[in-house]
Length: 398
Ligand SMILES: Cc1cc2nc3c(=O)[nH]c(=O)nc-3n(C[C@H](O)[C@H](O)[C@H](O)COP(=O)(O)OP(=O)(O)OC[C@H]3O[C@@H](n4cnc5c(N)ncnc54)[C@H](O)[C@@H]3O)c2cc1C
Image (cartoon, rainbow, N blue to C red; front, side, top):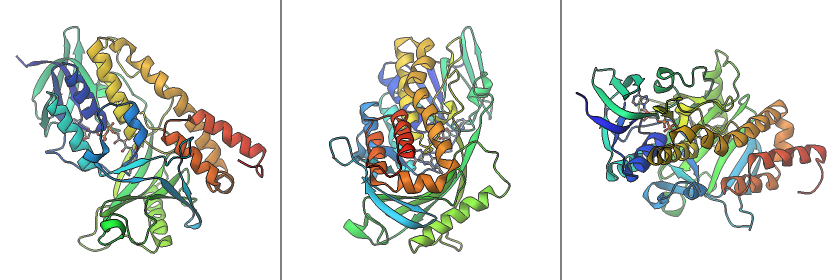
């Protein structure tokens, strides 16, 4: 007879590890299953997280996992016409975004889950979930099985738990490519790349249709990538176009992709595209989805870490309180309005990207607004309203 847990969490990324951590902290018996053979494991990601997430998820200390904190964005159009602007809170203070390396960040969260009492088993590829009146039976590809009252699907963009329990059946995806380029030397004890502005993340528009390219600084390495976020069917040459966007951004700042046998891997990874509110838990409350498995990625920036943390936290709170029936609605209240607005803003931006760049992005007021967004002080609905105001009055003052 398989052991009975209160909750089995499939996937130990930010969503799953947070769900396991908070559920265990709430006194539940938790089993956290991870496909990777061991932790830490790599996840292709820019690793940018707004510091304001600490207001939503208690107990996160950036000193434990963040490499650097950025407060500025350096925007460019096809590598040219750059502008460096500060992200600011409403009272003019720097709005902070942490730069994390995912192996370290995700391991920290899994450690927190274990410290709170969750059992972690790596090397388990969950392959089937059966939900019934008595609970759930979770099977691994190698035949091992476990029972629990509930299962949390935190198994990422291509997760299997959702489809197994009849959730997230018609997913849509964007796609991103990313590489981590190591460096030595640099400003402030080697923390900032010598060729780049300290304290800034680089964003480049115009080379990727419906997306952007980025350089996110980390301690001793750069995360460089490009992603296409709108739900267009990717053309056969999408991978190459994303790579050439990366080449072009790097070239514009005097850098290039390393080549040769030791060259770092250029990853490709799907990003769930938000298609509107849908159920995130089964009607019987046996299965819940969080993070990418639930499709909660903000469709303008492709930002998913904070939403994985927040849905993981929310799912755990609902499980601990015996209120799983309210999970979908509470998640909707948190994200649906914001994500709908982000999708509309994305459509406007990508319809006229150069105009949007000149009038919105290049205007320092635009980056200040992003700062307030990152600080959790404004909403994307407000940003959307602001864009329409600018389109109506393009030469007016901010
Ligand atoms: C290139 C790229 C750049 C990005 N940059 C940013 C960024 O800068 N900021 C940001 O906020 N978001 C970013 N995102 C999005 C962000 O990476 C995701 O939203 C985030 O990782 C979601 O966390 P998660 O825990 O839901 O899923 P994941 O991080 O994908 O974790 C899922 C876990 O489940 C495990 N797993 C999968 N299948 C199974 C299975 N069958 N059984 C057991 N375990 C399984 C995986 O091994 C993994 O550990 C980026 C995405 C991409 C692709």
